[in-house]
Length: 283
Image (cartoon, rainbow, N blue to C red; front, side, top):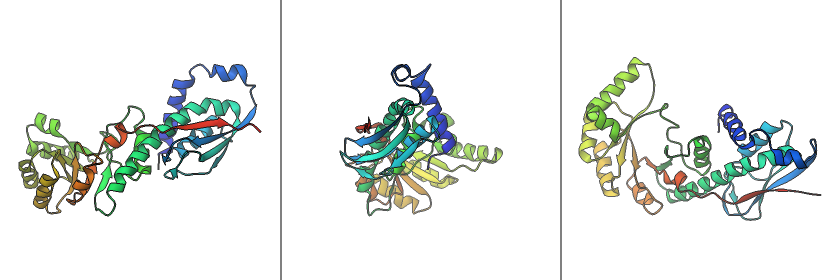
């Protein structure tokens, strides 16, 4: 579930960007205190995401706003469905409309694409991970959308996991010194962070095995066949992850190898926003 404090911080920043000195259109033509009702309508099929975010946006603007959810995050949706009804100040409804739609349309697109990937993994041990290939400032909600779609979140940022990638290894002088320096750093700073290392060949896998001191080994752009060879070498001693160019067409071939995780940045950066609308209900 989303961290409430982080979500409210995001909402405050997003509203500041959008509202600026004031929602002058609404202020000019709608009397203050006027009450109204609006309904979130689905215009395109997929997986719904962002209902909790929408509720929080409107409650941020008006604490006592009425919010009735007809659907929940993760529900399949089709054109014509109503996701929720909101009742409160018309100023609240109009000021929060665009931020709500921007969040929900983007999140629903990501959740829908993630769900398609996850469906390919049914019956397999392998789990789908996202990556840090996210929109600056919007990572919190993009990763939540992956979770809603059935995927799992990898690290949120550079602070919650050690991730030794090719550039780290090359700048550090190789696999062995990189692993040893990381472990010394963690011990010195009393940090309990998981360590993952990227490998580019079977020789790299062998070197990691000779050093140890990691939690997960990531196979960078390995073919399914090479992945199977690497898994045989590792023999279950460490968690494993396949990464690099994983697509809807190839993900099942990787799952058949028995790899623990596949990471696919595409579930976020290739996702297309879905069409939703928030329409006034006039009685």
